[in-house]
Amino acid sequence: MAPATPPTSVHGRLLARERLSAAERDAMRALLVRHFSGVTPAQFAADLAQKQWVILLEDAAGTLVGFTSLRLETLEAPVRCHLLSSGDTIIDPRAWGSTALMRAWLAAVLALREGAGRDRPCYWLLLVSGFRTYRFLPLFWRDFHPRPAPAAPAELATRLAPLAHHRYGEAFDPASGIVRFPRPQRLRPHLAGIPAERLADAHIAFFAARNPGHAAGDELACLTELDEANLTRAGRRILRALSPPEAPRPGLGLGAQRRPEASA
Image (cartoon, rainbow, N blue to C red; front, side, top):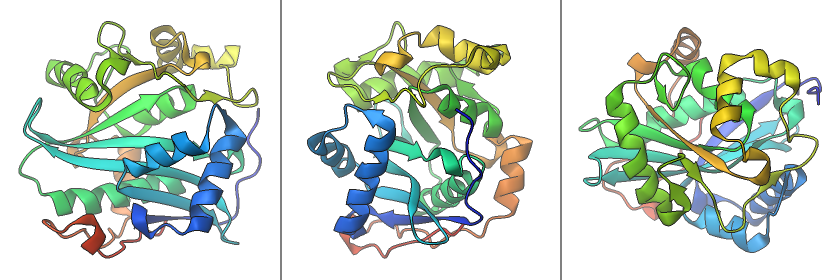
């Protein structure tokens, strides 16, 4: 399916989960249901309840065209790090041509990382059931795991399994690197599948081989370090153009934090 012309103006907002209005929650679920099957109100609410932050993408009219939810943890074990994990994520095809999500996401990461502190590395744990999401990794990050040759640094590879098990428990299979949920969400036919011509891309071919059950909702666990030195040239260009939003203040409970916003 070819993406339609993207909206002329798409901007992103980072806000604390509890600041979402009922209308915003309803719009998020409606957008997810439009592109995924297997989404129930209870599943959507449960996933969102585990997250602290949400990035909303809206067009000039204020219509929601994409979102992602985020959970930030500070861990001592199994790996001493800050761990950012993504929840439900979708971008409407008409916004595929916009870089608003990446710009808003990078601005959000800067704010959340500064709030958490730089006393330890910060990793992004991403579950991928679609090739478009996997292609997002090599576009902006130099090292990530798993990936086609050249392989990621061994240290990154060895940290994926314990962090994925910490986050997803027995749903994570360390042998395959796949997370299988009891009630998976599956891309609807208009987004599912990988066009044959796209398999000429080494990264997409690698994803298809590593996650052969993606159409059934299997999720490939991926890990990258969120550090400016790990950005690709494209990522650094976006980073230079950003004015980071207000960082959440360390030590405050989520309910006490002011709502930061990232315009993109």
